[in-house]
Image (cartoon, rainbow, N blue to C red; front, side, top):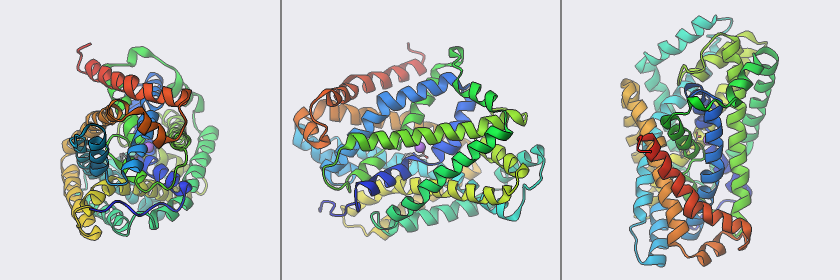
Length: 437
Ligand code: PHE
Ligand code: NA
């Protein structure tokens, strides 16, 4: 067995790769539609609290474990566990994470395929000057066209596998450096458009007026699960990337930057979509199709809409790609330790995910189940064990030396978050959603 000798070019490349993993369909597609389904403001508040109190501390922990272990999530966790309490059982957390990553990839690539289809529709002008009804029925006919979905899903899986097979350090870094700022800039443009043309105040009220009567146990569980999903936590993606983290720079600041960027992009995406929802008499709770209906409505009516639509859906596809890479990478890195060639392991794992994607296309229930189980159960439980591991199993001296944030207030707060706040928070949310409290 060898330890990773590949590193990112610089800390900056790591930030972009980790941001590329974090910023994806979770922000632009999922966050607006679950916010719509679970009633808006109060849901957003719980989500933001989870990001700050649980997500940020757990992300620091994941990067720390990856960088200290210098290996895939299974071997990094096992190695540090052995050093601390002579048990290598902690590797199981990494193994479950690898499976969770593949399960997410199964439905993620289907949605990314929808985005590719909308690139094509923008180029061909399919929704140009179409009515709201026509645009809505465009999306439902895509959902009932299994062959069409299979083509796009296969293409997206193939592109993901080609990038991962080419190695982590080389291709991804450069791509995200160019693409992430463009995505960010375009979302701001869209926000401006929405400000001028949409019912902006209705959107604002929907996202930020807190009505706690809408906050069911289920809504809280989904908000917490999404905090893990959107930051790519609880399954080892960020841990695997951390293994290539160069040098001893501060992890804390890096994580705050990634968390802030991810959150801002989700909020901007919501603010770009809800005003259009209300201005066009749509319902915010319409589910997974939200993005694929509201945005084409905007583009259908705006000057240069097809051009902007092409760019926007290309960027969504690219954001999805920089995330999907990180869904496969932990498993590939793990197999690499056993001498399996990167190309073989990548196409093998992508093949498994591809089959699962076919099941998602043909059975909506499989899609829903995979989405629900990974985000709301597997990622929070993975995050719980990572928090317990770094908070309780690893000695404070080890973690203090690894995160290099001194031993002052910030370090203490981080450790309290891992030892008490995150575990208690996750357990309370589970108990509450099971109606046990
Ligand atoms: N964070 C990604 C998104 O928001 C999804 C993801 C989850 C990626 C877990 C990697 C690992 O779209
Ligand atoms: Na995200």
